[in-house]
Length: 168
Image (cartoon, rainbow, N blue to C red; front, top):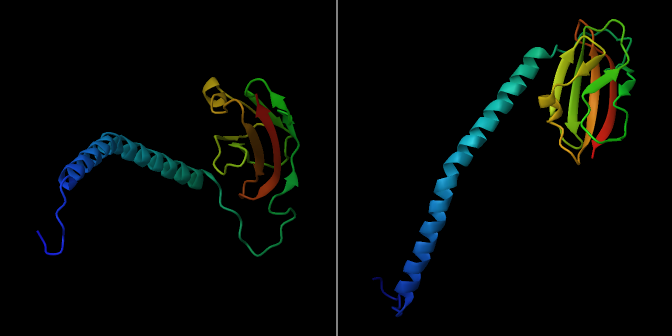
């Protein structure tokens, strides 16, 4: 024992009890720590793959020095359904006005305030019909924002639209 350290009766028992409590707490962490670390790794891996897929699928913007006839966001696209309202069920159909000269539309649905879409689809049609699994990604009690981007063959944006709805 080092000099200057007083010896008190009962401190050993308190220290042992404290260590036993700490060991029990750490055993709980160990029991759940590994599955949580694995789940975190899987989530990060899925996010990285989704980001890479988006990078590969999305055409790059045109960066030439020429002026464009449309702005970077293009012309407004009228979104027809679902309308901005409160719905009893998640919508299964999304429709918007057609844009002449487009290669494809990129449709994204977000929980309001989020930057990651709950659903993203590419289509050449001016509407999409969701599967039951896709509508299940829109939980009740949330407000959603949905966007449509019309892309030209050269990757430029011809038009954009945005609307919102809430699911009761």
